[in-house]
Length: 190
Image 1: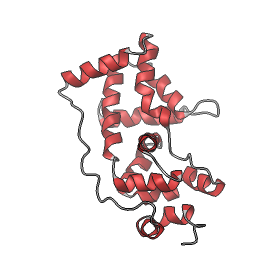
Image 2: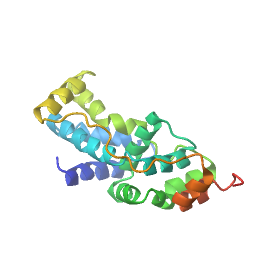
Image 3: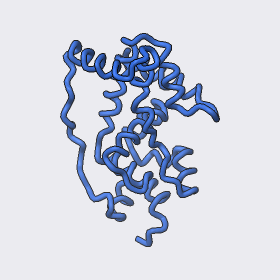
Image 4: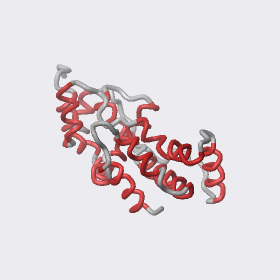
């Protein structure tokens, strides 16, 4: 699966979202119609785009939007960026402060909610779809290990995450993320 097909899978799932079906469920439904090989290839692309936004600036945006952001939550935030679709993912990757223009982020800030963008279940769509096909909740991880080995793929060390800075410094956050800070730091008195 190339990157264009990957984003096509994401967009198809996004278009299947309803009031009763969240993105991750729609994604699992779509992946479960594919072959096991397709699901593994999807996971490979997912890991690539997920890893590409493993950066301090993106983490800081998640920190503002989420009212804090642990390691696990940052994993969910990056999955949520993917769930927003290619256009918003690429905007956020280029300039995390651009998320201040996304309607979900704006609405969440107004309502005082901290769950905007975070999508834990999207991290596990491939394994859930694989389980649906095989009936075995361990089959994905065994197949994934074999797939990575056959492709010569190994776990990567974290690449350069960019410049680390103090997420709890409101002046620094305002300087780096003026639009998100205007939404999330307006009542801090700083």
